[in-house]
Image (cartoon, rainbow, N blue to C red; front, side, top):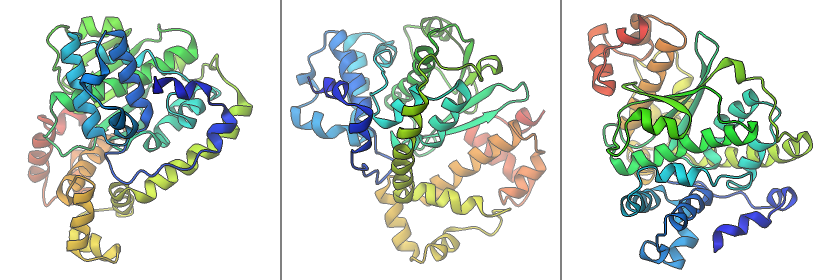
Length: 352
């Protein structure tokens, strides 16, 4: 099957591949499709019932189609651990130069840094943030770029796959699945397994009720060298990944807006008119570009504010008042209401 094509690639051949065009948040690397197809085969599903040969050739660039297929396969297989089955098939060439870079990185901390920094090269639908908590543990935040409050089981199974793949990469590159990983999730959509049972299958402690999904890697493993490290391959392939990520970022309107918002100390006077002016386009043209990326200015702005609020409150320890000011809210109560609408919790819960 076409899934096996990547196994014949070499670092040299990967480096010669053209930069893929990642024009909006729906882009996905073909490797995600290959993982799902391998899980389907293992579960005895007939691929022809879900995808034509033509779709297999082209689906890998659109997350909307792929996650619907993924969710349907999970239902038909009767296995809510379908994403775990898929994730275990990840290998150094699954995501081309990106995964090869991770496998050959010098240590865990470097792997985490480059995996989050250049994640857009394998998919634009999830925004990854790397931070370190007060204990020194690393936290990878998995933030969906779907419109807020629109998440369904279809998108949730995809997010599960995304997170479990990261766990599997750590397990494989370290030669052990006993790392003490923990995952904090927003909610729990599965019926067949409890969070404890699901966590036992992936050697990860799972808790539910967090305002943001995160994978926590203990400080004690961060500087552990990888068993698969190869400095020659790592430094040869990293420029390829950087180039692909840079191309994706330049074509991603959402990331362009994020960068522009980052330049402002306060968002008090920021609106779509100011943004359009800075991009030298009309508001109508900007709205059309955002629609083409499957989003709106309101969704982008609120997602940005939520990410910044969570970071400033839980990582940097800023006061709720400071965060409200930086995000441009007129007063503390307005910010508190917005934060509770986004997360179901009050901001004081994180700042205490």
